[in-house]
Amino acid sequence: MNIADLRKSYEKAELSESASHADPLKQFERWLNEAISGEVPEPNAMTLATVGSNLRPSTRIVLIKGYDERGIVWYTNYQSHKGRELAGNPFAALQFHWVEMERVVRIEGMVEKVSDAESDQYFHSRPLDSRIGAWASPQSEVIDSRTVLVTNAAKYGAQFLLQPPRPPHWGGYRLKPDNWQFWQGRKSRLHDRLRYTLQGDGGWLRERLAP
Image 1: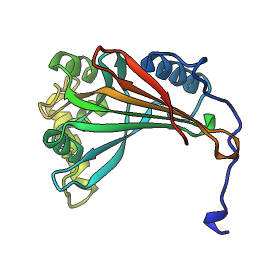
Image 2: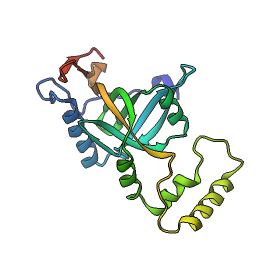
Image 3: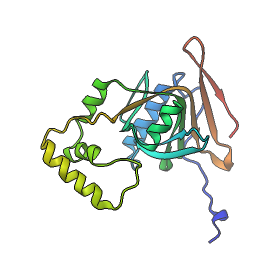
Image 4: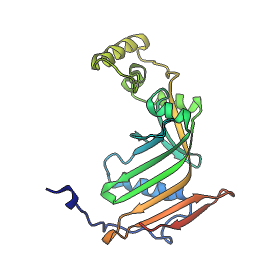
């Protein structure tokens, strides 16, 4: 099989100005809820793109853990590769790709840490193994083998028992959007693509882009 011959015709839905929300957050909420109710695999998974001091971009998959008018929230190790890149350049991009619905959402903006109270609240809602794992994994660091992780998990499990505190190097980030794009696949590659750009008065400019 020639990979260049792989093609798909997108024909499931459309995205029009009249049927979309003027507020991109509400449009996002509608699509996210439809992805969840449609039982799309991992509808909460999103690609996070950051840029390091060497100007090289990097991506990884993270899970959205909250959203409101302030922005999009996820949690991770602040000392990880992405954490170090965000410390040096607090701008990032997110992308949701709901393949089964032929939809993509792209979000860009500045990133900030959430409050300690928010991080504490979410951390203590996690399963015990995940809380221990936050201590056990020196995320993005080179380790000799998986034994390092297993040994660390056993050590911190014995130390904290059922009440591990939130590690000081672990918590949440919030991306504050200033640009959204909604992409709906259409037939003949004439896809629908709407961009929302934040304006000085706090409103949003909605424009249609050529695909």
